[in-house]
Image 1 (tube, one colour):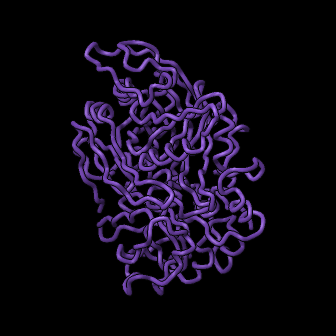
Image 2 (image 1 turned 60 degrees about the vertical axis):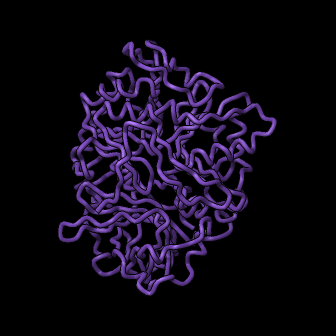
Image 3 (image 1 turned 135 degrees about the vertical axis):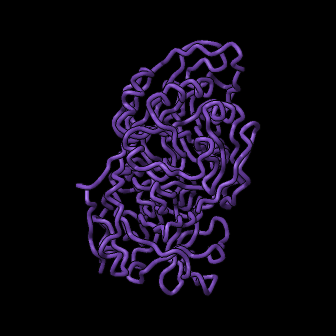
Length: 486
C-alpha cells in the first residue's frame, strides 16, 4: 500500500516541512506553479510521498507498469528534484573546496556524484554535478535545495561566486528504455553513455498565449536560454545514467531462504564473515537503460509531448525504484547528517563520489580517517519487503530503523520504492556485523523516533518499543557493484 496525498495541480502547492538536521534550517518543497500547469497540460497529476512531490499519469493510483515497459521506453516527470547553478569567476575552485569529489578534475562532458558534508564528515546532501557554459549545475532532492543553497552562500565570502536556485526555471525528466535514443534524436540530442553529457540547442515556437515564466534568479540568463520569449533556441541537456538489471534481483537468494541476509560480492571481510557470496543471475536479467533530461521550464510541455510520441508516461516513483536498484543513495531531510560517505558506498568504484587525493573540504579529515585507518563498520545494502497474498507492503519512510531478531536497531532506511510487481525494494545503511543476527526487519514507526541530526552510530542503542521486531521482514538482494575491501 502506498500512502500518497493528491496536491491541487491548478495552484502553487507545497509539501509540509520535514524535520531537518541541527545544522540545516527546516526545508519545504514547493512545486512551482509553472511546473504544475505544464504537468497538468501533459495529463499528469501531482501528489506527495515521504520523498517529496511526485508526478503520475492522471487516474493512475500506483506505479503498475511492468519492467518490460521500462525496458522498452518510458518517461517520468521528476518533481522531487531541484537544480542549483553555481557560477562566477571562482565558481569551480569554490565548489571544489566544498564537496567530496574532484570537480577541477571532472571532465567537461561528464556528470559525477558529489557529497556535501558537515565538519563532522556527515552527509548533508548527495548531488549530481556537471559543467555548463554558464556555471556548474547541481541536482539534488527538492526538500534540501533551499537549505543547501543557503549553506553554500554562507561560505562564498569574497569569492566571485553566485548561486541561483533554478527550481522555477528548469525541470528534469527521467527517461527509460531502448526507445530513448530515437526519442532524443528527434530533439537533436545524442543518447550519452552512462555519466556522460549530450547538449543541444533546439528551436521551439511557443504559442502566443505562452506567459512569461519567472527565472529563479535575476543574476544571469538561465542556462543561456531565452526563457519567457515567444520563440527561440533553448538548451537541452541529456545525462546518461547507469543501466539497471531488474530481473536479476527478482528472487530471494538461498541465503535468505535459510534465514540469513547474504552480502554482495566484494564486500569487506567484516561483512563477508559467515555470509554467503552471491552474484546476480544476469542470464535472466532485463536491462533498463536510463537517462536524465534537463529542460527549461518554458518548453517543458512541448518537450514532454514530443517525447510522449515515442515513450510511455509512468509514475515518477519508478525512477526512484530504478535508482534504488542501481544502488544509488538519496539524502533526504530526515536522513541529512546521519551518514558518512562510506556508509552509503560512495567510495565504491562504480559510484566514484569521493576523491581521497583532492585536498580539503568540510569533513575531509573524518572521511579520510575512515578510509585509511579503520574498517568500514557500516555499509549500504539492498533488500526487499515482499508483497504477501497480493497485498503490497507499505514503503518505510527515510530514516526508519532496521532491527535484528532481538529488536535492536542495526541500520537505517536510506530510500525505498514500490516495484512494478508490488514488492518494496529499499536501500539501508547497516552495521556490517549485524547480519549474523538475521532475520532483519523494518521497525514500526513508534520504534524509529530519534532526534533529528543524530548520527547513525547512535541508532544502535536500545529499541524504543518492545514490538520493534514485529515489522516487515527483509529479503536480501545483491548490489549491482562491488564494495571496496577494507
